[in-house]
Length: 136
Ligand SMILES: [Zn+2]
Image 1 (cartoon, rainbow, N blue to C red):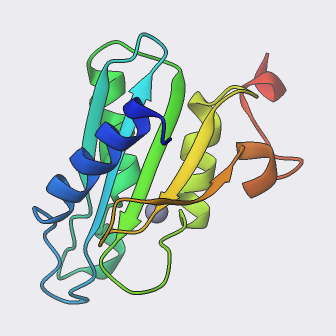
Image 2 (cartoon, rainbow, N blue to C red):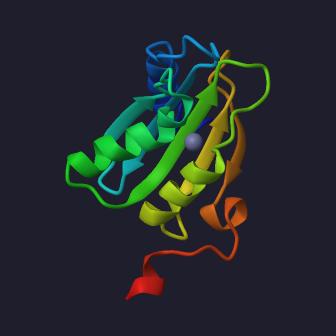
């Protein structure tokens, strides 16, 4: 039986995915982050005619979490509108890394069914990474 919190997060990610501003790629992405206290934050991708200003769904959701005063990600659900599973880009892996712990789970879900297809830790997605401890 699927984890009810992850199922709820997948539904929220799918809902927000449809709010994506993606007039150029038409590739919609939705993300839902659970902070350590289980509060949820969503984000979608926001493209820009100046392509390098495009922001990712994961970054938007993490920004909303930080704006709300939360600093740790318990879990994050990510999905995209294509048929391939949507994995976080390199920049998002580093952004997740900033707020992740070794227990943080990253769920890649099917946007058609909201089913969890893959689960990773940040160490699996970004091994031997640079992080806050390097600047302490
Ligand atoms: Zn990204």
